[in-house]
Length: 148
Image (cartoon, rainbow, N blue to C red; front, side):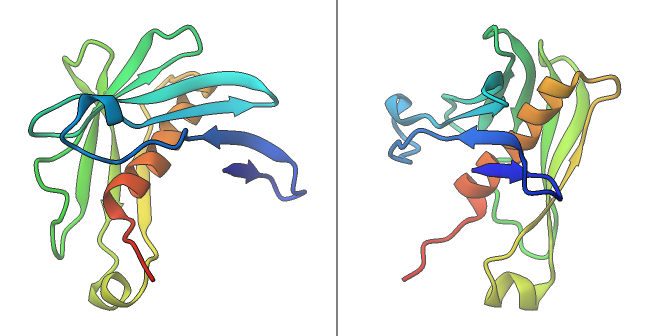
């Protein structure tokens, strides 16, 4: 996926390798690579977990910069779904990715979704871009539905 500016110039590129989306196997974990101008910004890596979805936001050097933890159930009706963004060591919440409830009509009759991202204060641009990419991966994994 490409993110372009008003002049249609690509500012970010996101690449998600094709993998089976089977939640019960550690060999099918999802990953998304974010780059800008051909330079890697970072990756979002799904971590194996039994109960709650978990992701690592890594810099281009492979070091964990942030962690994202999801709820046990992502199917909350009539409510926002929060994915807390945690510090690299997981000790404190520094931000949130939120799937915002769009109302009954929008949720039932369209495939449109609205997300909000709260970035940690002072976060470097490369990690912000990677966290932005994490929002797309979470949207794809948990809130897209198959259609005919």
